[in-house]
Image (tube, rainbow, N blue to C red; front, side):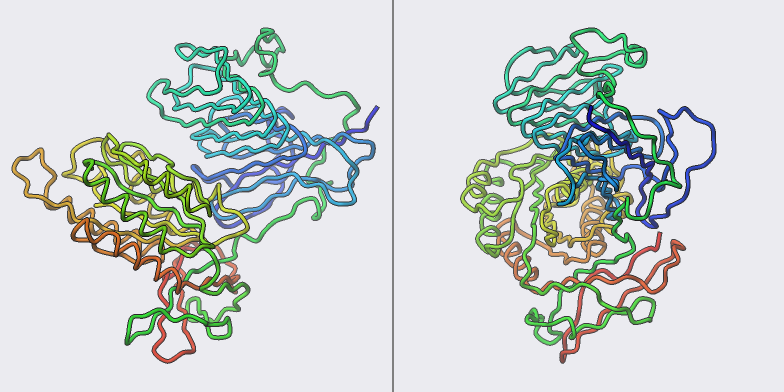
Length: 536
């Protein structure tokens, strides 16, 4: 009989600090709150879970922390936990690793997820089981089956797709037993669920929570019940005292990353060819040691975010042409993605180096309906970059809009669910750069139902504030015909961006503003980027 060992961690995740403490001593059922490590949870944060060596079982719960346990089966027990944890501000990554010296083994990952989380779960040939839905969930498996069980009728936008497998649903008003794609909205669509598998089957169904706990699950939903314990004798659950420092790999969340565009003060042209030794960095007047440096030639992941609200076919044609100019101007090593939005964001193209595919998808862009939800779309674009970025590439969002989210007073229609202040806070925590291009769409208001002049001013000012918070630049585009030229100026500016990272010498997390100043050892050279951060 193969031996089995269980590693348990209890986690809560936060922006900063990554504070570790023993679990509190309140009495709770072991299945609900195992002993272990805790990290505070920030509502609305992002959680990425990847296990290429076994199944993933996830459950959504009302607690404000995440629990993680890994069950290992193999001929020999592991000496150390296979769970790897990395904290990147508002993104918590949990993955399973097998070291070169580890024997072949299967590792089942079990996770409990807060309701407010934005979760992504990835496996290779193994299965994913999710019970309940967080704020948003993206489930991807290459060859494994994916099952999603709901304790009540879901209130979500759902897209389930399997290339060669089947998609089945027994949800009320959302039933199917065959086919490869299932898409629709249940309720008001308050949550988002995306399920993709290349060859595995996908199942969506209601499941009674009480039946799950008592193991009285109908035969047709047996795959959705709480996972049965595999054969073998489990080793004791590791509590805080038994987990050694080597059991958890942590990336210091206090590492501060800056993206600085360097220009000549006299000519306003970018300065290239600088080295790390050309920069000096100060926090609250105290010089800091630069630990990481990327030159202006390092590639970017660029996400074009395009406002199509209220656009006619003629307008969309000009927008397409401008986006193609951006693609042509970008460096071949830069990956580019495209998102359009009106009432909701649409991923036109994920990040890609394939320029031909990108051009084809841009040329297929059409009009979109719905009120302008700019802040939700911007949040969606940041999430896409967090999910898709590979090889630690630098990231940037290039946003084109008139800034008229429905949340602004004087703008007709429904606004974003995300508030403007929440978006700005998220932009400040974004490690990349954000450029905004304000398109002037102002017209004379002839009635109280028309967009008022004050609203146009607010849209202009807010886009400028977003660029400032994102460390990028703000461009005013008075005519749509000028948009292509503005895009080309953004590309030129990105070619002057250097990336620096340091660990603050002041370790206190007092939520106070830390002013950042960067000087460049070149005549007339000025570094432009984020001015500081809050030490939360």
